Image (cartoon, rainbow, N blue to C red; front, side):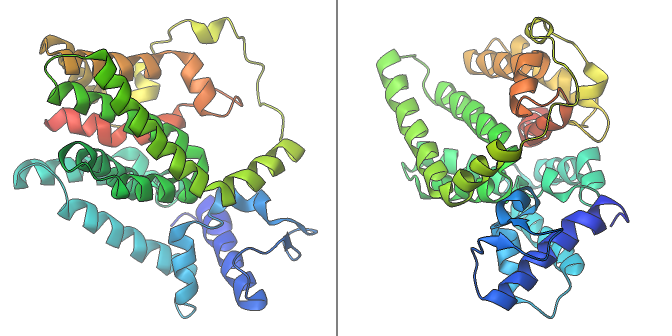
Length: 309
């Protein structure tokens, strides 16, 4: 792990959550007395407060938080590999593309909350498959809920990714578009997501209140006109550690969707490119604070899917 943010924030603060639980016996303490000069515990929501991954660590006081986060990350990714939908060779290739992508390698030791929600995002994609193939909603509800509880910041982009995959799956399964049927299925999907959001309100509501009480100012002044003009920042979006990081081949794979001349591919490709290249969506996904490309990290599984599909 890195000796900067990873050690100083992403392991020390979760360790503080665990210590506070041992001292008070409360999973939901009202106040963080020993952090700084004392503050609302929900000021630390971003660092994994009530995250299912961190809560599980409360059962293992004999394992340091640094070692715990390394071990649990490995277990979660192992489960992902076992449940991949493609054949063995493509599954291995896709898994390697995911685990060896620049954002994963970098942020597993620098900003773990940039990627620690990913197993639940992948579970939610499987939940969409279950929704269409088995008409079961449980996996999707639980997965979205766990993703929000793990990282409320990246869960917004994650839900958009799940929504795009839902649209892709619907049009792939249904050759003929029936507006009434689509609206009905979309309504079910929206209700499922809302149920997950309401379940996570125990974290979201007090966190939102805390943010509104003490939210910092944006780093830069955003020109509202410019964010409505497409910005083709290929290198920033598809390369580097603070975006998708799968290089230009992932962009070519998305572009290839249009050449298949299949309706479901064209619709999906249009949705992805619109979100990636319209600064307006980047602004929204960053909470209206700045225009950083890190909000596109949840799109990695979707890009890999189309790279090997």
